[in-house]
Length: 173
View 1 (cartoon, rainbow, N blue to C red):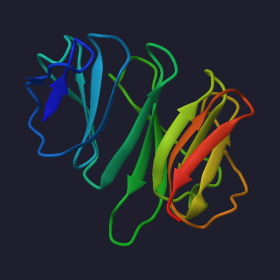
View 2: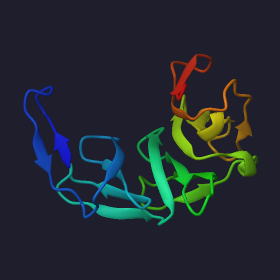
View 3: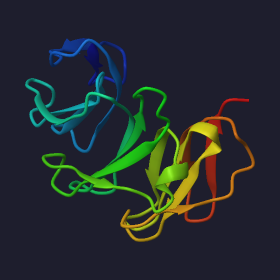
View 4: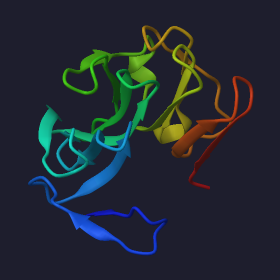
């Protein structure tokens, strides 16, 4: 289900969802442009406030955990792979409001684990976290990524930053 409110949560109405049984996450870049991350690695986009939906990304073995837009055109997907024991992750990038996606593989891709969250402080500086304490950082808009030291080997599920120096990540104990 997709619910929306326009009165601060006093009342809610249901939007017509695209044909997908499960949605994991979503984001909006303005009142009309909404994205949903669905089962089987799908991204749906609405350009009319949720009235109609278009499939803009599909990948049958991927779980898309998080989508973050740094401006009204450029966005990044944090992806966890789920095929036959695979634990690798990927980052996908769009430069045109989710119409097309490219793959941005960190230079340490072999050690990158299921990615759960991605966050950009500005258009250049971004962080990603995932399984087994994986933490990555980019300083050039996702063109390259560096693996950062992590004090944990437990899954990290969310990352956010208040500014270029102060950030938080939460996950398993």
